[in-house]
Structures are given as structure tokens and as C-alpha cells.
Image (cartoon, rainbow, N blue to C red; front, side, top):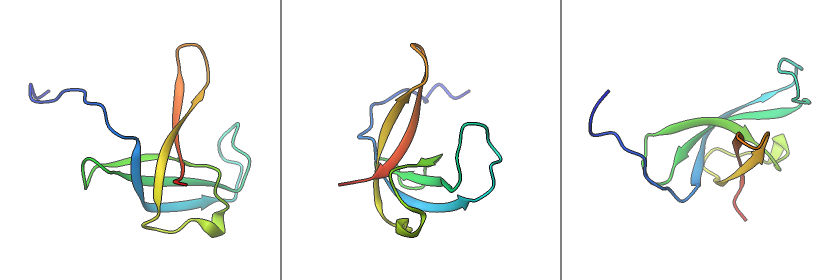
Length: 87
């Protein structure tokens, strides 16, 4: 591992780089249709994060749209980062 790698706070904002609408119930807990997305992080162009796109009907998802992170608390120790369209 590189010694130049470190944690830094980021804005939580990004751009929808690519996505796929899932219509089959392949993952427990996810009710179709749901959107699996690649998000380009605002602070580092080219850095992509795989996440769910929520609060967005599939027909409203557009490549290039602005998104922001939201965290779903799963347990006291675990929060799941997801993205929604920026308001």
C-alpha cells in the first residue's frame, strides 16, 4: 500500500457517470426496479464509486446529473452510503 494514501473529507457530491436499472429481484432487501450507479466523485474526476441511486424513478435517471450522498443506518456500527439526485 502506498504511504501517500490518506483519508480526506469530501463534499458528498458527485455526478451520475453510468447506471443500470435492475428489474429482477437478485439481491435480498432490494425491491425492483432499483438503480445501481457509478458515481464520479466531485473532488476527484475519474474516481468512480458504485452505489445505489435512490429517490429517483428509473426514467428520471440521466447520465451527467448531479447527485449527493445520503447514509442509511443499518446498525449502530454500519451506515450504507447511497446517492440521490441533488435538489
